Length: 115
Image (cartoon, rainbow, N blue to C red; front, side, top):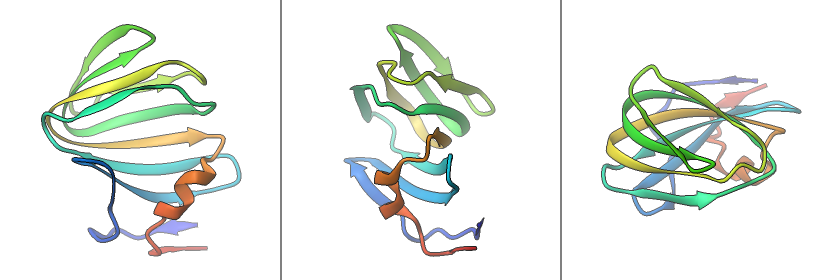
């Protein structure tokens, strides 16, 4: 599968937090998140390993009770079932890969991806 760049098809998952699934395979899924300054991604956990890269902006990322300030070019890996969340300090763009692939995020696939 190849994903083609497009500014279309972002969907709100929370107020000020948008997602677009870029590509996926049998075992992984990559999504782009656009996060507005001042928003909070509530603490949560899920059965997916989550590896992220901050393209732009600044976040306070909390993983299992430890706060990490992340800026452009920083990356992270959140183990399966770890409690995590974030506060968005500046408008931000993050890329995240989930393994196994999140079937619930397939509905956010842009349609610009081709096999």
